[in-house]
Length: 386
Image (cartoon, rainbow, N blue to C red; front, side, top):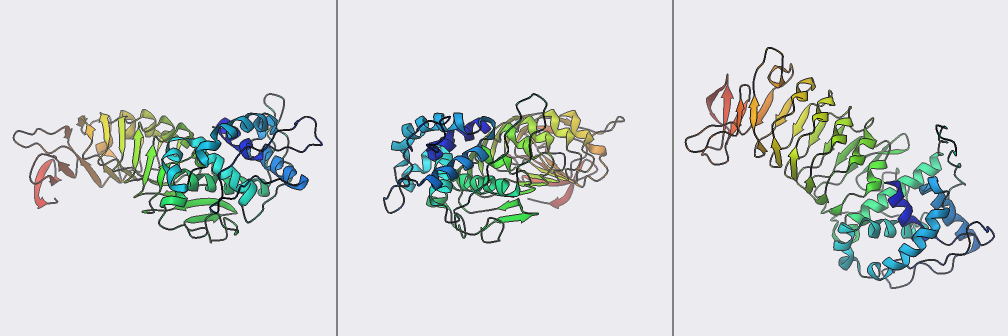
């Protein structure tokens, strides 16, 4: 949430202009040392202090930066002993504590960003309920996205574990093509592609505020934690989510059903649990759904019959139960474009099927040999697919 961002930001930018009595005097908290052991928070010039406050107001507009500057001065000092450790030592802390990674990102953008970005004073937020929120300029948006990418870098142990990090935290613009795996459209970040790059940690909350993000390719890493409800922030833009082969936990959130333009959801090989949310039925543009090898339980929600664009569905090696049957009222089996439906529906002696399926194209049973069989008209075909 934006409040979290508030908490982190002022631990770096808490030195406000001394000529503005509304801010008071707040000493700069300690930031992580540079690789050479030098301190980031050497005395800022008056110009540097003003720049820090403008960044604070840009990244935390609701409080105008004032509450932020006060609160994070305290948080930053409290966190200083933890963030003084080496990159390797802070890897585990960053994965568990979003404050640590966000603090490091803010310290970087205020003190060490070689681009030395600056922004104009952002528009003040509305004071009346229902008033229209002023639009930020492209310079403000670019600063927010640059900070967000830095937060992603630190929260997934970029300095310590990433295999490749060409261009990251360099002086070039994030949309110049120099930041490996970052693509832009219309001046906004539109795709993140960092597969098999040893990202280790949690996706920061800020990640879900990349307002034009349409494609996510982060498979084959060690990304942990749950998918947050904030994923719904990308309801109008997200089209491809490839997060398979990670270490995600928890339920697939109801907000996932808000991604109405989503075409592909590849979530297999994670530790997701619980039932699929009924809201998933809102994904009428989804063509591929893959939750293979997860701990998803229960039966499929009846709302899935509304997912009219589905072509491929992979449900095997899960804890799903129940029936997938043809019905006069229509159902998953009657979806027009469905070509592949794979589930744990293979019934063998001693190991009954977990799912009763009339229309599955491949049925599996973890305890049988062969494990999966191709199906034709509800019966096993001769072709062995395992």
